[in-house]
Length: 86
Image (cartoon, rainbow, N blue to C red; front, side):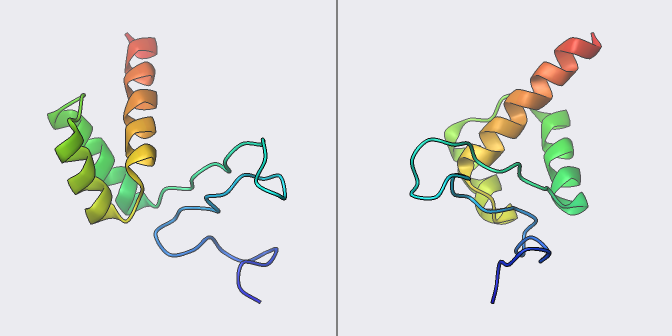
């Protein structure tokens, strides 16, 4: 049975994309577990450009097999991390 307890996350490093609560109402998404390769790509993109436009975000999401929302959220969180460090 795929996706059972104790199974590794699906290819691409992302965990389940649905809400935790059965029935799809309320709840929160599970935390995305980015692979080392994905983090490296995201960090290098961030070093070049801290803000991505829609086209760049679409391209990056397609290349990395992640959703645009995951890319957008990662960049928002990374900018906040940079702000805290400064």
